Amino acid sequence: MPQNFFILSGEQPELAKDELVSISKSYDPKTTSTGESRLVIIKSAVPWEKIAKRATFVRASGSIVSTLDDLLETRSHLSKPKTFACRVINLSSKKINKVQMEGETGAVLRERWNSKVSLLNPSVTVYLIITNNKQYLGYAENTMEQERPRKTIKYPTELDWKLARCMVNLSQLMEGRTICDPFCGTGTILLEAESMGIRSIGIDFDVKMCNIAEKNLAENGYDSKVVNSTYHDIQKIKEKIDAIVTDIPYGIASKSSLSPKRILQDFLSTIPKRMRLVIVYKKGLDVDELDKAKKYEIYRHKSLTRVIAVKDSVT
Ligand SMILES: C[S@@+](CC[C@H](N)C(=O)[O-])C[C@H]1O[C@@H](n2cnc3c(N)ncnc32)[C@H](O)[C@@H]1O
Image 1 (tube, rainbow, N blue to C red):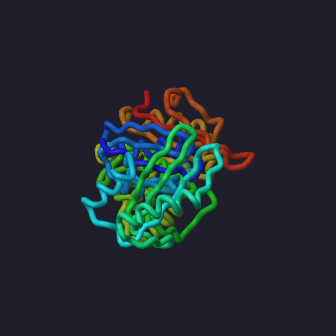
Image 2 (image 1 turned 135 degrees about the vertical axis):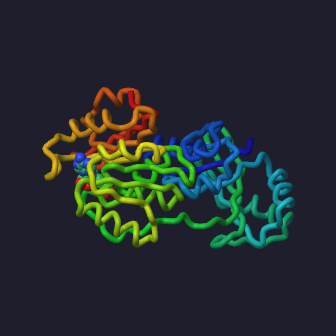
Image 3 (image 1 turned 60 degrees about the vertical axis):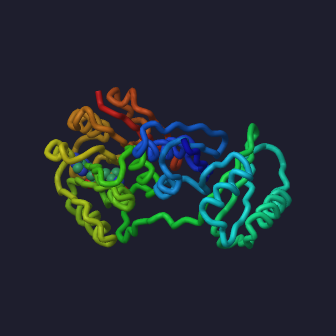
């Protein structure tokens, strides 16, 4: 089974690692992972580019090879790169002379490949990843940029795109599947889903928010549907959706007299029991129905810590 490496940016490390595993599992349920520090190694049949294209918190990624000879062998089956660069990523507590190490490895590769070094735009980057326990060798072809949706109309209560994207990925769906966000607001979750080829249906009881979400979707040429109704409408579309990904209200909305906790409880009793749910809410709203969910705390500022809860089925 091929092994791929992902170097995390350092933000939300636990969430970041689980996001990678979830993306891989949406294509290959046999995915396994190991890791150390900011390095995550994914063993699966999924090409690393497919995971990296969706992942939110990754700084570098590529395939792992055992030795420099293996790398040269692999490359000779493909083609010799026009240009290349070597990068040392030191995740260990030791001090390392990166420049010297990159220079030495680069000299070996230059001789064998007869290729030029290009630090700015290499066609292949060779990585030496050093952790406290082990050294890894990896490489990556120059890859395309992640497709980011544009958001023209913003709103103070909107969710930041990184959490929205990560939550969509935690739902473990591949392209062509459908999520529903029944509290869609400006459509942040819908936009992130559709930018990754996942269909989405939004619901919001505030017509103003529905109009904003529709405009944001139209700006990107996306065709996710937005329904002006309450979350109870999820019952009507449950056959069409594969997961629920949502961000419930943090305060008492002007159109509702229910407290956020009551909304959360009523919402959980309304949705289909056997459906994957990824939900974010303000810390302190914890309810029994989410006792078994995997939870991640995200500190925003002193009066807002969010909780992301992931549940396969609501019991
Ligand atoms: C926290 S905001 C969602 C923000 C959204 N994630 C975004 O990025 O813009 C919660 C949304 O739930 C909507 N809402 C509140 N009560 C609702 C209900 N009973 N049914 C459907 N939508 C509701 C509000 O109008 C608001 O837009």
